[in-house]
Image 1: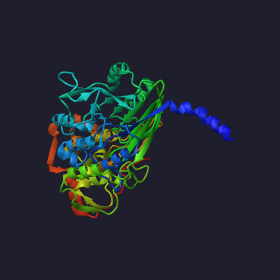
Image 2: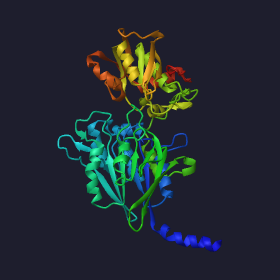
Image 3: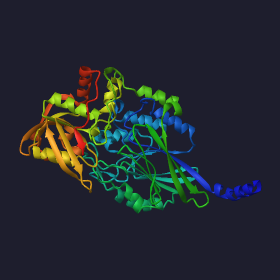
Image 4: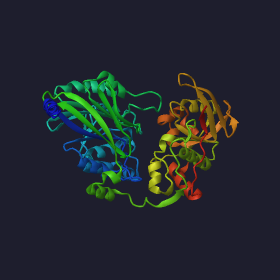
Length: 488
């Protein structure tokens, strides 16, 4: 038996020797979360994982690094770039939140970056040339393996841009691939700020089409934007990877190439949770992160008796505790009949225990003020119905609804009540929401139909101010009940 085993091992040895592996690490939607939360995450933990792994790796990011915490907000993204430089990122693409501080803030971030910013579909609006410090792709050499990395930026920035313009991602990919292929890379990967699993509006973006149209020409697609985790999912032979958000995890992708021919063989991914007790922290990165810490934001402003969750405790309930609490505070402040809160604006749960100003910034990093609008019952019905599937995008105070889905997944039997009375199509309702939604931003697009003259700003308070006021007034805060939006 030993002779047979030895013979098999000898026969397999050439196959093992002919295989070469390349390691690629990936993050996305880091949003300025420099430090661990509840013992998990942070750039120091990420650096520690990199230190202990294979050498000569690539470290890639899929964008949305510029905003999300007080450190990124006050530095207009520069502090995030400083940390990414120190950790040793090789390349990133551009996410929608890279525009949170408008056009003028993008160029300084690009200049600060010591890693490649890749966006094949991103141009100056007036010249149709690529902006300074932007490349469509870059080819890296790792242990004799040529890895081509293509970037595809998100086309829907959070702030309207006049200086820049975007082309369709697949058109840009089609255009640059022949140029890349002429350089004979062994591996071709794409970093995109879009998701294979984006269920926000029920329409999937282009990401999966890369697997359908470019199998054999693109080998790995690293996605983001939807804050999803995707591992070892393939369309044809194209591997799709998404790594979540807030530097809570890192994906490690091992790509195998034939050592003799250089051809791609396979790619596999592994999610590594950045649990500090297990990963440790790189001391230099931890020290740098501390120098970037914003002073005065770790003051405790109140307490949550229990965690205010961002997920519904009952499957049929399509509202959440934290979002309902935000809506209740907005209704109380505005005096409106209904307050509408976009659930995407609150990023993380409010954890039980002491709550600091930093926690509130992490929960709601945007500076949106409150706006009052008068709308018809017919508008409200359309607004609620439009935003219910595939997942409910809004929380309401003063409004409740029940509905069913038909066999095609469309809303039917929708019933709406405003302050316990059935909604009336012709009646006018005074509502309030944040300025981003009132201006028609993202999922609030229906508000674009309402003239600006009918939108009344309500003071200087932001959503985050309302959260702080609510904590000081009602601490310890208890979670409000869910069940305002129910699928029957």
